[in-house]
Length: 138
Image 1 (cartoon, rainbow, N blue to C red):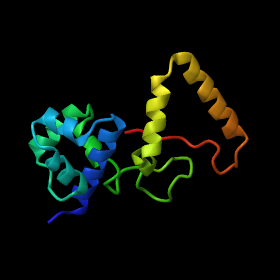
Image 2: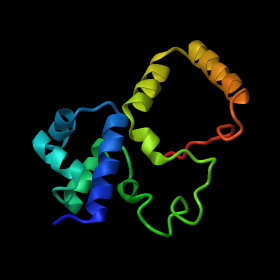
Image 3: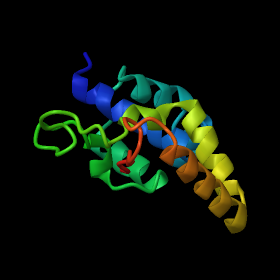
């Protein structure tokens, strides 16, 4: 039987894997398991053991606590009224966001600077509700 914690850990696992552009197969090979097991972890069907969580954190280059961020009521991101200046973490799990980030970092430094300048100029002309949003990174 899975819990909300298992679901949360699985979502964080999927988010990080996608952010790095890894397939379930490539991550599974890195930690020595089958891709079906990664699927089960990501959907919360199977609980991730402490040893496996350590291996996954190494393979994904994140500290173990990354998988638990946002879970606790003591986490500043989860307290009180949501801050409208913080983009929801779910934005990072969208394919469109990942495609944009990959495309951005595949450019040279010059084109990246121009694209960033363009985005900032468009932001200045956008609605006040979207101005000044900042991204919280894991």
